[in-house]
Length: 318
Image 1 (cartoon, rainbow, N blue to C red):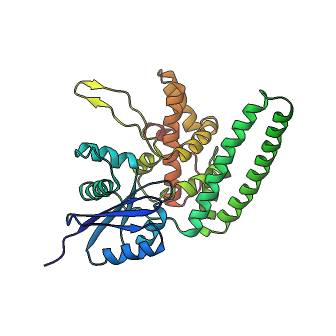
Image 2 (tube, rainbow, N blue to C red):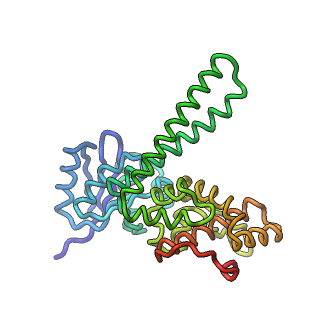
Image 3 (cartoon, rainbow, N blue to C red):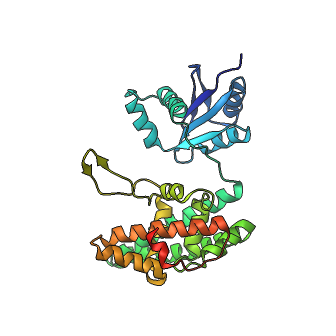
């Protein structure tokens, strides 16, 4: 008889990997190091694996996920919030590493989440560099806000730090430029994206690094991934306001900055924004709608490989 498909949940901690297989109910633990990953793969080879489910745990999950993907196994890295809500919905209120692994396996079997394709070494390098630049920019903003409230030696200390941060950000800009230009596909995408009013190199590189799905999935899917798709909140006769939820905050922040410029320089977005505001929409809500529309434009451009063309006013009604 053919073996039944097994759904594997792996709870990743700094020291260990707790593994649970469903529906067989087998479980074991391995060390979160090279020898433990070899043991894990050897154990799984005796089963017919449907999918391996892991939680995003600040990067701790990436090494084992990469090792499993290299062995040809389908993996899915999910948001911990999804797993916890699923656990509560299925009556699993207690929380241990073994229980968490079992919940992940159950989630995989019941929900069959989309397969996660991990970035290549070059993609990871670009993502990490862009992420680090964002972190330094946030630190720079915080330090500049402190300058006016400080005096004497402490103010000079902040000034020195500001100077260092600005220098380091310029260095990271050079690194990002080198990384993005070294890859033919990225170079082509960068040229397409930066042709759009409001999309500069920083925003374009953030999109390439943090949203590799751009141009590869539907408009609806890309909007959900970023977190700019308006979601219904209805129940019975009640009709709640549509809200955005979840998504990739770093991409959304970059897109927000691009939309601020785009609504002034892209006629169709300018008209769309003005119409929403004239209908009584809050300016932030109107701008979010423009972010949604701009993202769809960018997704289409990358998908079709066509340079920027100003959309017609008819697109406003899409």
